[in-house]
Every structure is written in structure tokens, then in C-alpha cells.
Amino acid sequence: MTTVDESALVEPGKTPYGKVIGVVANRNQLQAVSDSLSKLGVNEVEVLDGAVGVKLLHGEHDAVSQCFLGDMEAEMVQRYLDAVKSGLIVFAAVVESETADQAAATAKAQGASEVVHFGNWVITNY
Image (cartoon, rainbow, N blue to C red):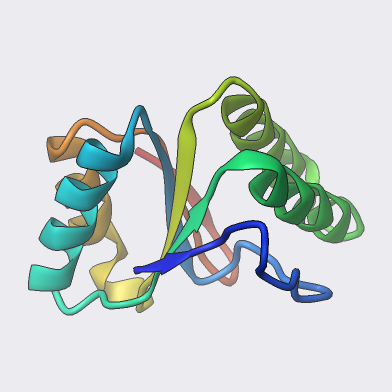
């Protein structure tokens, strides 16, 4: 699990594509989601919270708003931004398209909400 904190650098042009993203209430729930995803072979889970999470999500919002089909993406990223601003934690798990459904179901089984897979051509809301 990669945690974004105050010392992290925000990568330019970073987007949500290729990730299952969701919201959890606290670090315990985040750990349960991360552990469950790890059992599926998903080892890269980015954690977005606090001021740096807000900054990174602002960057993602700007990136997806420039996309040709950016309406849904921008709306979802705004929801994640609002969640982080409210003190919740957003996670972004890098997944292969063929394992996205299983990863999303696993995250939801651990209590994650607002779970979405940002595929290369399709966005799936679970």
C-alpha cells in the first residue's frame, strides 16, 4: 500500500484510469480492503487523504475534465475530493481490467463505498 502524505510529490498528469477507486471511513477499514485486495494479487494501493490527497485529487479532476468523455470521470473525482475534504480516505488500487469486478466486489465486501473502476474505455460504478 502506498500512502500519500505531506512529504509525497504529486505526479503531474496522473489520472484514475486502470484503477478501482473507493472510499473508506478510517485506517482500519483501509487496511482490511488492502489486505483483501492483496490476496487477489493487487499490490499497488494508493491512499489519498489529508491535504496532499486533496491536492492530488484536484490534479486528477483537472486531468479528467480535459478528456473527450470526461463528464462521468469529473463527477466521480469530485465525489472523491469531497470525501477527502470531509475526513474520509480514498484508495486507488491498480488493477488489470479482467480482475476489476472481483477487486471491486472485494472492496465493497470490506465496507468501501463509491467503488468505481476507471477502465481505459469504460467506467463501471459498483
